[in-house]
Structure formats: C-alpha cells, structure tokens
Length: 204
Length: 225
View (cartoon, rainbow over the protein chains, first blue to last red):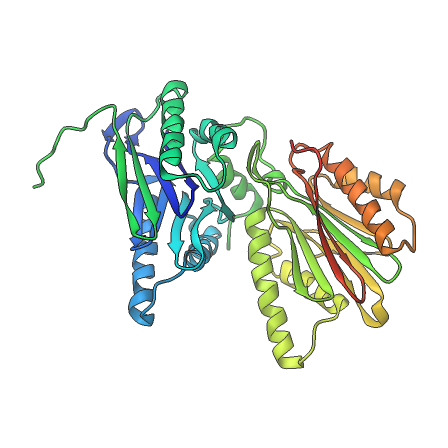
C-alpha cells in the first residue's frame, strides 16, 4: 500500500515515498518516483490513484513553472500550497482527484516548510506528516522521536526507522522507498532504500 | 451539480475501510462555542484536525477573523470550512471596498446564510458560529446549519461533533452579564469538559475574548488525547 511521509528539520525538509506501482495483485514496477520536484526548491510527494497522481502533480508542476515564466519570480511554498488546495477544492464537486499530497519547500527568509493537503483539499501546515497505511506506523514513530530543528543525519535516521517499521509491520509492505530533500541549495534526490532491485530495462 | 450526500459518502468512504456508515460532519471532528457576556463575547474552538480515527494535527485553526469586531468559527468538514472562509473573506473585502466600512454582525450572518443556501442541493458541509460586537458594543452571536438556517441566541451557541456535550455544559455553567474574566473562565471550562467526552475533538482549546477595547487570544491545555 502506498506510503508518503515527511518531516521538517533545521533548514531543510525531507519527503519520502514508497516506489511500488501496483495494480490489484500485480506489481508493475518497484522504482516508481512518487516525489515530484516542482521547481528548484519544492517537492511534492503524492499518493493515491496512479492516473490522478501523475496527471495532477504534472499539472501543478507546469503551473508553477508558468507562474515563474510570467512573473519572473518563483512561487513561495505557501502560495503553491494554496494554489494546489484551490485546484483540488474546485475539482472536488465536479471530478475529484484522489491524490493525497505532502508539499515541502524552502523559501529564502522563511526557511523550510511542509504542507499536508489531502484528497478532499484539507490543507494544513505541519512539521511532520504521513499518508497511507504506513502513516499508522510513521506518525507514532515521529511523535516519539521527532523534535524541532533536527540535523540531516538525525532526520534520515528517523526516516529509516519509519521505513524499517513499515517493512516489518505492514502486510504487503512496499519494498523500496525514495527519499528526497529540499534545503537552501535546492530540491534533490537524497537516496533510495531498496530491498528489491528492479531489473534495468533498456529504454526503447 | 456536485455530488449528493449519498455520493459524498461513497467518495470519502472509498478511501476508508470501516464498515460503519460514513458521517461527513464527523470526518474531521470539531467543537465550537460562542458565549455572550456584558459588552463582550468569547468564541472558542478545539484544536484537533483528524481524519476519522487518525489525528493529523493539534494546532488546527477553526476560528477566523473577519474584522476587528467580528469572528466566525466553522465546524464540520475542514475542506469546506477553509473554502467557506475564503469566500467570506472575499465577500467582506468587496463590501469594505464598496461601503468603506465593516459589515455589521447581523448583516454578515445573513451573508453566510445566503451563501450556504445557494448550495441547497449540494451543500458545504460546515456549520458556522458567528460572534461579533454590533452597534453600541452589543454582542451578537448566532449559529446555523449547513443549509443556512439561522439560530440567534442571547446566551450561547455551539457547533461541532461535541455539540451535545457543549449544550449541556453551557446550559449549566452559563450566567448572564458575565465580565470578561468570568466569561473566559466559563467558556474554557465548558469547552474542555465537553471535548473530553468526544473522541473526535479536543487536543487543547483556543479561546478568543473580544471586548470593545481589546482582543485576547488564549491557548488552553486540556487532556491531550
């Protein structure tokens, strides 16, 4: 089952997500990247129906880029979260998207921030959050072990503990996870945690 | 037309795996109360944001400022509370531009009622509690259901998943013409004792006390569970 979780540390924010693309009992692939890099300093971790997830996150990414092209400056994380919530809320009573989102970003002057936006467009600024069945394990782990202003090493240790907990306790646990980080130097992939290596497929 | 209430149950229920019927107003959990004192009023809410049995945050804001002497609390589905708040702030700002003054609480209550009734057959699933100081510093409170049926009261109004407990607590603790300090104490005790009997609301309280001269905001620490 899909898990997305993340936390805010000292000067950075981390978003981790599982990387299984599943259809009923079949695992299509185990290296699906569910944390999209919206722009230089924003990450959007998404979980939910696969079609909606890809379409909606790409839609948000393109609109974030469009704002930057039109106005010459990037959107702030808070504004991006508001825009995303607005799109989900407008679609809610017409053709709803089934995507849960964790939006993390770094703004100069404000620092790192993270927003929880669920599929019915409930938005809240948080320090730590999680979606999916994995949230039942991650949130408790983070409640116990998280403290404000963690260093990167401490945060990664906590993320790894959450991943171990999911792998141990969740039936049909996803084997692989991707971890991405955003700080003043930008948004980038930090690491993969793989327990099953996907075979390399040559691109046609 | 948007989803009906039944269709809503399917939309939200598709994400949950519980056998009991899905209640939209109990999805996020909330508790709101407003009380009238002598030339002052207090409005209080709990701070939990949940998704059914899971708690997401313990610092969620449910009481919003419209202008210095008018506040609205929105209980029910959190997404609709946020959408309603955005629509109301927009309408009030337009009103301020046109009329060059703030809205009276009674007028604002009618506005909220009208906005809710516009969606009569596909409503916003939130129940507002409105509290303000009107002319002559006369406190005004009212609540309404999700379709905009106003209920004016002279003493207190309640809303949210803990509303039944709140009715009982307020009825027994309330006295007319309380001063600000006594009003603050009363509303805090009523709120905390009520949310302690409701698993979907709680995790502290937020109380706003408004007099003609000042506004006090206080966070209450209650049972954090």
